[in-house]
Length: 525
Image (tube, rainbow, N blue to C red; front, side, top):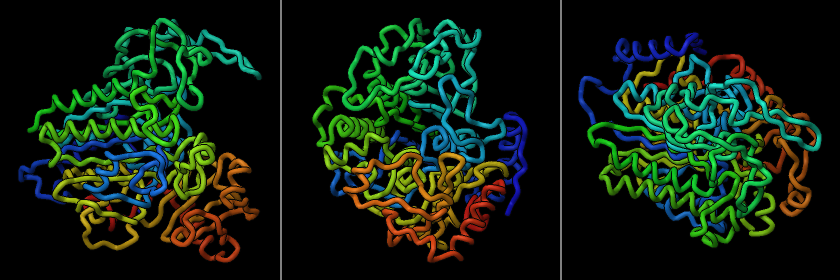
């Protein structure tokens, strides 16, 4: 298996990227001396949206999703797509680098946390910029910043068990640029609130706050009510009068404005990580009652509406025919989904076992749609097992961009799949499922092996287990045939020791090596 050299600095990484694009033109798929109309690229990334939330892939859904259904009917719907992790920051990192999150870290970036990235990491926007792309990120970042602290956290909050130190608005120099964010990772432009339920509660444009916070967010006294569940807010600085209900509408407006400003002669890449339908569940009033799944269902409907506004803007601008649109979600649905099954008979996880955070299928088996007019057959469906890490190699190949040796080490080129060309199936040798350090899963062909007696971070509620016929297992590992048993009910661990030995060995190999892709099946084939 190929070993990758690892540059030690961000500048060296960029230098190698640029040098490789000029010195290894012969490895590109297309003749780069010819001028081509490069496609615009938009990645829309939902937050905590379950596989079963889309009407087009869940006939029993209680949530109308007309715009996502239309997007699927105009492109390719993947029925076996996976995020790298069952939680937020790691999946976003993997999407933007083509690298499994666990090669760097497992957990999310917490309030005022440092960047998730290594300085040697090469990102998707960085490589697209070498091909003349204008790049933007609008929405939820949640991959860390280098905050200009004036001192340590001076505030305190008391919980039942301890007193916690927290940053206040006086602890940060808001006049300074904020490093380590989107602009340092290849984006020309950023606008967003960072992370909707993490401080600071401010708008950030590029690398500076639009307005400095002067108050502190008290999670117990937000001043508004949610439509379902809790606020999930962490304490910290906020702008006076901060209204969480303004976040999604503002991001929608900014996205539409940015697309409308784009020059049709210059290709663009827009990464649109939405803060919804992640908690706090706060659909705007005009969306109340639009679903039969309560506040969450209405928030899902609003999320679908936002996507519709983006697609409508593309069409009105005359950009629809030359734009690749990719839609997915960072992980499975939050724990509120348990109660939703009983109250509304809506299964956000679809038929899959588990939720967000789990190595169970429901934690990482996510919606995935790609539309590319003239290149991807409309209303097509693929059952190929893919991972979000595959986006980077695929887009690099489509844009005839040579990947540096250290880039996208786990990413497979999906062009043959989306164009329905001949290829060796399964395309991926195997796919790793992981959230936290102690539970690992590996999918190879029809099989999933989990090196633990459970794939869940938390136990399912007893009532849900009984109602849906689930049971716990007592073997030290788990084995499921995902073609015959996608709900992971029949544990075959004791019946196939040779399969377990093979899959565990491959899992350990992937973890030890610096890459997992097979060269003959991937980059710039």
